[in-house]
Every structure is written in structure tokens, then in C-alpha cells.
Length: 137
Image: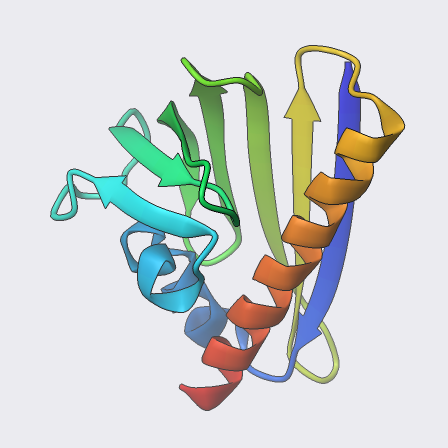
């Protein structure tokens, strides 16, 4: 098993930052996500979504079952049906200046160091994009 974690501070309160945690918005926020289906599905615990993602031309499709949706502090989902099964956990923590977003990906398998490095770069890029959008709202 491999676990990768990254964080970023957003200079906005958790209630504002939470708005960018709506997964249906992610394709508009980042090119990492091509599509979240169904696009009009409510994001609630137990919901099942299909995610099409990948920073390059080669896209991957996987299922995401929402396992926690606790506004405005936590989003978790289980990934399956794609090349990197596991889970993703998002925690929003109030800080003196705004909100800390902590993003953790757990993988069911051990990932090679080059794969880990590539995923970490994508996680950091997505956090920067979320930070930019949340700070503009």
C-alpha cells in the first residue's frame, strides 16, 4: 500500500473553500479532470460517480463511491475500476488565515517511486488550482 499526502493553505474560510470541493466543478477547475458523471448527481455519502481523469492525452476512467461528505470539513471517496484503486480523503481545517486543505491518496498497491513522484506533482497542481479558484470566490 502507498499513501501520498499534500496540503495547501487557502486564504478563505472553510465555507467558501468547501464550494470547490463539489466534484462536479472539478473539470472546470482543472484539466486533470475531463469529466465527472453524472454531472448533475447530488454529492452525498453513498453516491456513485464516474471520473475521467489524467493530465495527459491518455485518460483513465474509474468509479468513485462517496464514503464521507461532511460539509464544510471532509470529503472521502473509494476509487475502483481503474488502474489505481484505493481511496482519496480531503480534510478542510480552519487556520488563523483561512483554511488548510489536506489531500491524501491511498493506493491498494505499492507504487514505484517514479509513479509516486508523478502523482504528487498532479496532486500539487490540483491543490494550487483549487487554491486559486477558492481565493477568487
